[in-house]
Image (cartoon, rainbow, N blue to C red; front, side, top):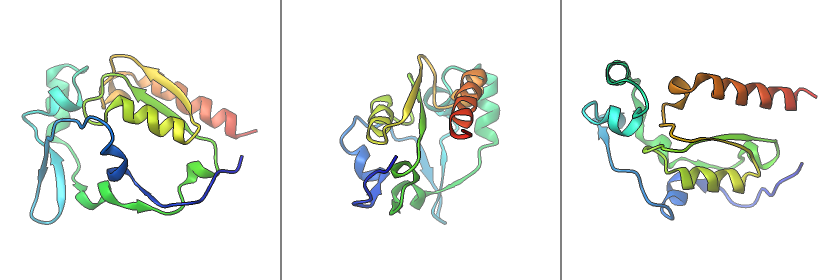
Length: 140
């Protein structure tokens, strides 16, 4: 399957069209970000027990802020099959935006209703099933 390789894209630009998640990123002097631990459970892992979300908040790995606005010039989804798991109650990335990305990439989509951004922790079997489906489909 061949897809267009027309324009570079930036996730940041595409997000402007959709309702934004509440701003809960904290920025450090060196350009790194982290999720505000006081809001981590509410906005990142709402479908997990509070103690588990608190542990995740305390053990979070910093992210370089520029990663969110990086322009990608040769996205793999333009030439390769892709799969997307839409976390239905994600408060970090709007599920509508996740669906839009999936449609644009012509991805196979699995929706997990009620799942937060931490769907890989709260629904590991569904995430594993999606990975196995993608691996099986591309191994042919």
